[in-house]
Picture 1 (cartoon, rainbow, N blue to C red):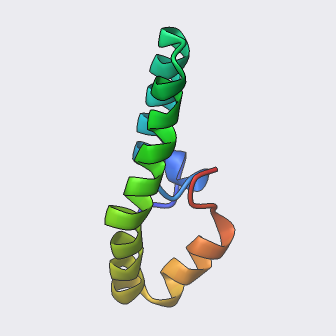
Picture 2 (cartoon, rainbow, N blue to C red):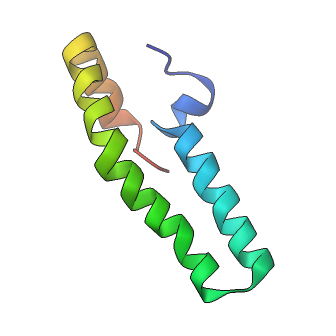
Length: 76
């Protein structure tokens, strides 16, 4: 289990990076609809992936993962 580097600041730094990139594109486009996309992306990641990934990590790593989860926020 990697807990250093970007994983020391966010449990899902790849998803965070994608959300920030989408936010940047939305700001560049200056469209309200484009600014809603990052929030839809975050909701989709929460529902479709993160919930399942975190359950699998807890099963695999047990208390070690629970300790990490208490110390590091999901997004920021």
